[in-house]
Image 1 (cartoon, rainbow, N blue to C red):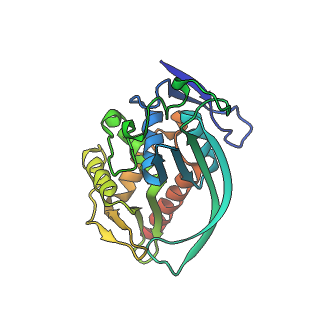
Image 2: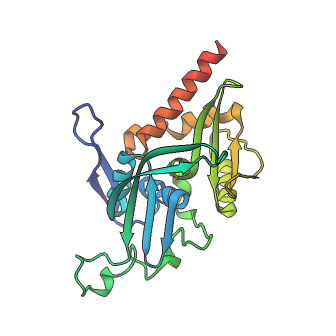
Length: 249
């Protein structure tokens, strides 16, 4: 059974979008696929809880609607993964889901002390040990990949070639290998390059530039209907595609 949870206002005065979420946060569903993609891409999972970070406020609110938890806002300055000599300052929203899901009192029922209904991180799709069990979301690959892109991906316009670049960057090589397998199985044409090392000590790979427009368009095709997306990331993709089209002209 699914519940409808209020989402975020789109800024034009319209009523907030209703985000449909399943009663079980581990069930195969578009909302859970999107959530766990974000957790794998930019989250930290332990027996003490889950922390997942995003730079998009509306996306953070959607993630909270899916799994609960507390949101905190901060401003951070970080290095670019591909060039540590360049930094950027941006808003950062952290969703924290604690192992204790009670009302904050010292005494909580055993059923309320588990992490998303599990006794520890081991039973979760992402357990902090390099194990990614995305099989439950195989029918929702678009939302899963969208969450992964927004969690650990980059989108840019390459002025030198007039193309759009889509890449995935993470410290965990195994996660990137899992993303590559998802790309191979997705209905959009998304060939990709070999894994490489970043200057910050992590790993990355990119979707082929020629395939980026098709893959990016497919990735965000139904996002307005579900509300499962980061508006700032979609705008970045749309602007990049427009720049590439203008370059060709």
